[in-house]
Length: 256
Length: 307
Image (cartoon, rainbow over all chains, first blue to last red; front, top):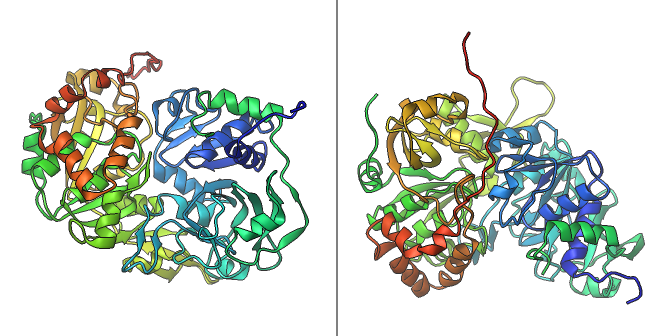
């Protein structure tokens, strides 16, 4: 190690997600990684980003204290607004939210996400917890960032159930069903970052994380993954980004 | 106004009937009255339709306890652990019984309760277009916005009017006036839409305390059927200014509920073998005291003077 900071894959994912947030943007923050990503963005390049939490919390500065869930007391003290879910989701519907974070069990090559049922919904092989607010965030945010674990059985050609709408069978289908904006802008996994490309907005390989390669990422993707012309290695977290992250997550709970 | 202070046991016995639709805890992760969850299971309530805007592991416990016939829900699981093992067993293997599932998103559930609260025939949404939630929940309809000429599909969500809402608050008086602070989730919509509201108050105070700050009242006392005083009734979920989240408790529940036998042992230990919430608190012992928030971050006083 010669001046290159050490980091975990989780930390790389958090920092990569933080980099997607531009200064001044209004962000619908999800649980776990996105909470940390919002905090890192605020403390580094996006000091004026605003965080919305679907339980009814708006924050300017990141919470000071460990959060297991978005509704924990440290996320409430010092909030910029404590309100209801309908108020914040209503503003999402009104077009006031730039970015939304979501996750799920399965994602397909057009960025559709399943967090409801594996198999037939009338007789599922696995019953997943369901949408929560993800279907709303996917439908109505200015753009969507998905966070996933990168495995063959999670990145599939076609999800068995679309909980959170991506580009359906291609971008024209998203528009045709009546959605006015949005769609996935990036999928951040533990191996790579995928981005939509071309008229159909199919997910392409944009960058692979250090230690991975275009080939290793493809081998763990359930469809024939095409790569962007300028695909490259994901830049590792910088010292300032890691320092910000360690300030927010002092015990490392979300970075293991 | 009448005195509504009753034992939780009596409130659940008298106000929740088999087959009722129930929303229990509507703030998503915090402020979930698990004391009422346990009492519903202890009293053997059956065929409930749980309206579930997350409510953390409460819905999963009720399903495992055999109380639930239907989930009208956006999310059922365990926020700390992920999947809800009882929800999975019921949906996949009909253990302990089969359940019907009506899929919602959080916004759809919130707007359905809004429609229920305000007597609207439906709520129009621009969410869920393109989602398979429209296929697995046939109660939603997509229609053309009748007010414009260009194509504009809108999702119509039917109103939801729960038979019972069980909601936690920091403090209440004996008449049903209550103060709530922190994020509100869907608690206000749930209270205004429900036929009967049961308030679980962490503390009982005199009426002037509540009426000194009427903006902090989330729903009016005339909509409240009963008030139960249960300290730490939200454990293991948090309550702003009172209780931290007991994350280890959620994680332990998640691990032990992985198989049916483990869940039944957990249920016996923490619910069925305990007569009431006082016994539950005593069993938690010093662990509960460690969760008590002792710091002070008071809001500035506001002036309601009329002249």
